[in-house]
Length: 356
Ligand SMILES: *Cc1c(COP(=O)(O)O)cnc(C)c1O
Image: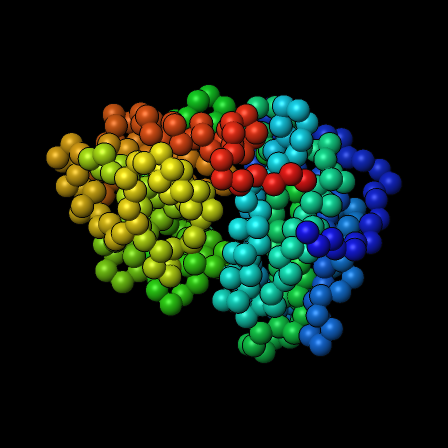
């Protein structure tokens, strides 16, 4: 494993740690951050770990105008014997580079970026909450910083990593959520940026989410951008259904984000010999399965919640209830197994976890 030589400036004061039992996602940040600049011609230079602080950018920095930016999200866990574990961080770094490529941003050395991430976590290690279900959320991201209003790829970039302790996603047990199937707006189209982790996808998805929320639904189910018929994702998560004993998830088609949780779930199911298929799934098929009583479970997957069961799907004024609005056995088993591997309480037969 390559090590990145980083110039470290430690903070002279340490912030007060928050109450780890009452954390609100993404609102509290640790004492330090990682910064690495890219300049055309020079490449990546001057990696630094410095005290967490605001950054100064030219108002013409291209990220503000044309949205050239990508991000990642992963978690570090403190095990019972005080080890720090990351979950498949190499996959995040690979995906970061795929997103970079789509946004015409420079690629980054995946091993060196991971080395930076580990060094930063080691320095802010005390910020990893040990309470069950909690973790340290890691947010690597890259922005275009050249001051230039012409529409073209920026010449200069900044890569940063910030850390945020996050609370247990489910405090009072896992409650299935109500989801509205979106039939006006779309999240992504084939040929667009749906499979890149870039800010624009989120900005354009807020409107539908807000409307759903006002109507009493937690999130929307996104259909494909062409026919508005085939299921793509749920909110900012991938989606799975269990129909008649078989698990199905939309196949990767260029507009779906390739979730690492999604990939891990497929691998776990195969390991357990549970039938799992990646294919096109229409909303009519789900409706029909619901009518026939074969729609057994539905859940979203992603780093933040790991598994988010769906209890109701609203489509064209019809409320489709899944598993009486309760969490299904397979959803619960997947949640327990995956979180167990992540926090080191279960064996890791796949070698997914990486020690910091
Ligand atoms: C990040 C993300 C996911 C989930 O990916 P994980 O790697 O499992 O966290 C799913 N959909 C979208 C749109 C995302 O941005």
